[in-house]
Length: 89
Image (cartoon, rainbow, N blue to C red; front, side, top):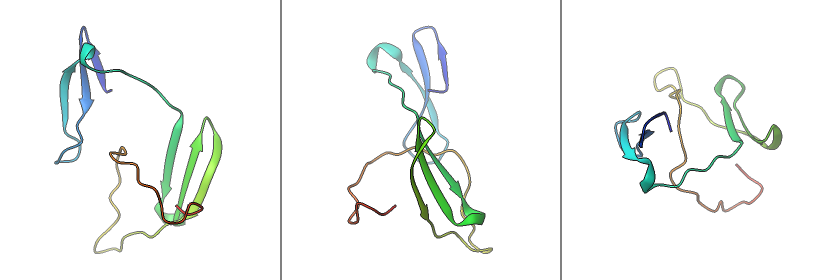
């Protein structure tokens, strides 16, 4: 949630273009929180996942090139997929 005004919530939308937002009625949704954080460090070729400050995963990542750089920004997970390697990123 980005903002709350009375009974309305301004939220990020899982549609293109990235960064799209919209207003929804707070009564139409349930809100929850968590302390998971995924940090991407392109210069270190590293991804780290923590929960409440405890490191759960640190793994190497591939990044873009000068001609096609890795985009920065704020993202969210739309789908959770079961990885083929449970010990991998």
